[in-house]
Length: 412
Image (cartoon, rainbow, N blue to C red; front, side, top):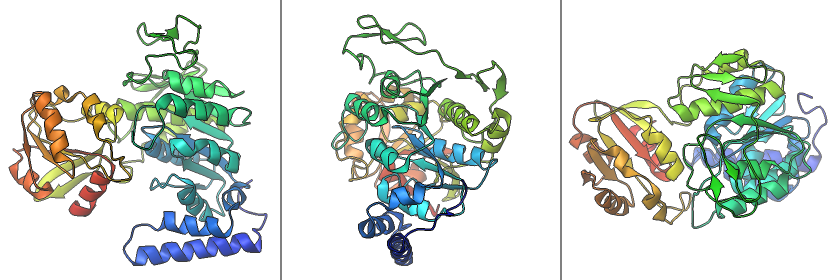
């Protein structure tokens, strides 16, 4: 049912009002959107507020290591064909940020919510979602995130008994293991470029066999389910075998995979693939990702890559050599302070590109590039790196807080 026809309790209304006031004060002070601090204040005043705000919405949760912000945006655009949508479009994906987003959606029919992998089970319990999209699991933020198999187990336990329709990537064994406890799963063949976190069977620990695009465990029989939706080149194949063209302004194979999963989610709510995919074309950038900006009279394309799987996908979509590449890596709290993941990234894929290195942990990255036998220069900041770049559009690849630093510097 659309809209909050069941009025909130006085306590809940107070919590919402206080949260909005704190968020507005945070924005006025130039401390960001205020969604997280506002949500924290609201939840302090009413710990059950998230569930109360969700009760009259058709909730869709989206979780993954990579691609959840973009997929959330694509699903939201598709579902607007069927009614008003509220979403945490800026990526505040823990309970406080989600609460702030829902507090602004009293007239909406759908809530399309990105959820941090570690919080999925709890948010699903609180919001009683109609649909949950699971895209992938891979190593990320090694100092604070659970090992990937533990995350998959957490998802599996949290989703057992859920009434939600689960739309899951059948090409990721960890996602399949997590989703298999659910009664109603729609399998999507969305692909898996990064396979290094899924060589052992999540069911028994045996060695996974991977012939072609298939996978199975030779010891316990755990295997890739048969998909009903699939990404096939530049098309989405629906359950009836019809092929629908994907036309996106977002680059790369990974975003086509995100579109395939998003089309499957939209169909759960009666939005046909053709309509869903047409609406997805409207998305040009997501929270600054893929934006091309002018800085020092040069074109810079801003690309976010937070972990080995994300860097691998990003390398596949940058302009070919000799396009200059600026790499920026930080290791602040939001990034994870452990930079050992740099050694899992195949930087030989940058051979032939002029490479310029910036960021808090530029020396860590420089050592990794040295070992990968890449030619690079360490720079003090973005301004210096851009001045040293040869002609051509500059590809700028950064992890989370480094990306935010870059956006502020270029005024994006």
